[in-house]
Length: 308
Image 1 (cartoon, rainbow, N blue to C red):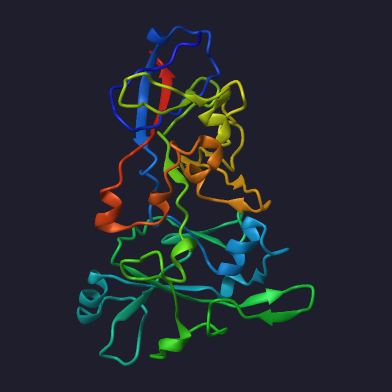
Image 2: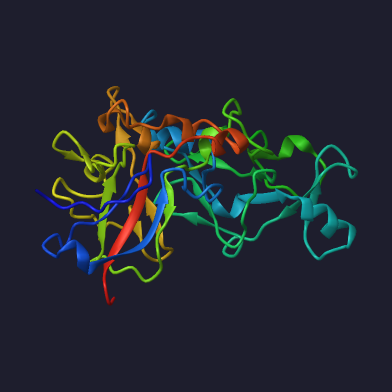
């Protein structure tokens, strides 16, 4: 019977790559671990519901957009102080010049467009908090018909330093909740990987640790890691797949699963194939204090050989 790492941590998952399963457990060291709740919040966003629906396969294709037309604006507690101090940034205002100021972010430093996933923005040097707001404007285009497409954004053209609220669509609301129309646009399936990870030597195992202390890594004959799309059925991680293991930016992107309706679902720990008692849909629905009260069911662990 295959040996499994034991951790006395109730209600957690462990992910380990089984590339070197012949090595005894004593030769492995835990490099890093986290729970299914530890996805990177406010890191990746779909820029429009149209991109989100195309990603899930609910519409045939996503519109194109001119990246030069995209403008990304941020309002934080710091933004007001910067404006009053006449900080050298470009600002716009909602409602009037006494309203909340939004600062223009810079592509390539504050954020980037992830070309692997159409219509996806990734915040790099800018670390968003729950009470920060992100407003955007951009032009969406149907290339086949050579015409502008109207998505979530209510204003097609880029802004100057104007004061029109209708020109700025809120990609991220202040303290977002499930009923917000833009709530689902934030990715909740991205996790941090340790830097310098060698995909040819690490192990990635998915385990759930019940209260009875009998650690399990599968349901029936199916490994949790395989159900989540991270390894094959034998536990070998898909380390060469940059859509899953982004070693450039040290990110783990758990892929979507296919629903009974044959759409994709990007909430991996809600996959019914994990088993009714093992799914954790609440992490995709709750925020702030309610989110903190959710119990972990899994622990995500990366293991590397000792001495590496």
